[in-house]
Image (cartoon, rainbow, N blue to C red; front, side, top):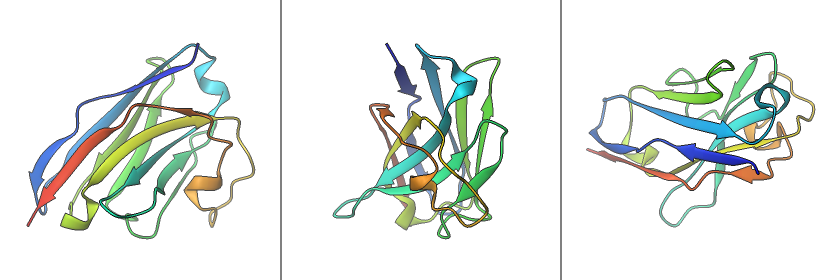
Length: 128
């Protein structure tokens, strides 16, 4: 059974940093693409960042240059380093995994894979 468990999020002031992690189990970790999504108050869920089996990554325009997605295959763990946080980054953040699709530099993170497995979500709050 596939399980994705995010670390606790947190509350920070604008300009601060947080790192989220997502521990995966129940499948061959390196075989899937993985991603981070978020859903802010009154907003639709959006893909924030995604990473393929080889470690290549794509980002939403809103987080480029501020967020970094990475993974540690040995630890079956996905990370999202978030720097220069803004109040508009406030959201519930979810990690997800699924069979990879086609990814190039312009691919929307939400479409990197058939994301069928989801974590429970973790809250990130950024105050001004």
